Image (cartoon, rainbow, N blue to C red; front, side, top):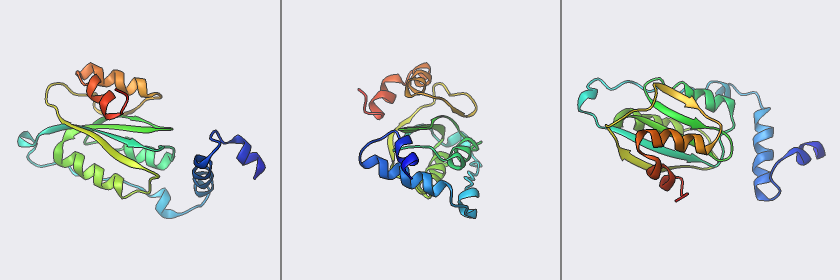
Length: 157
């Protein structure tokens, strides 16, 4: 237990959250291993608006959750795991909203949809791509012309 405590990066109340996360990661449950986000494609997508949504997480560490996010094949996006977790999703409104409902159904310390914008001009690469830093998320959004929007949604501007 002392080794675990000394290896944690935080020193205050967040330490308890880290401890709980570490211990729960060792609990073998079928529900934890079977997280699956299934987003059904919308039949008539030509009339459905395309939106970009930015979701903030207190942290995004679980490999199972990360794999489930990367499996969102009907959407485009950028995922940044770690502290904080950031997820940008781009797609047709109905598909994005279904994905958000599925994500909210998972157990999170904190999850907030911090920004949404209708955006039909340019798109992210196909699929969901993981990056290592928040600055990489902002850089990819700048390529779309949404850098300022992204910074505002992240509450950095």
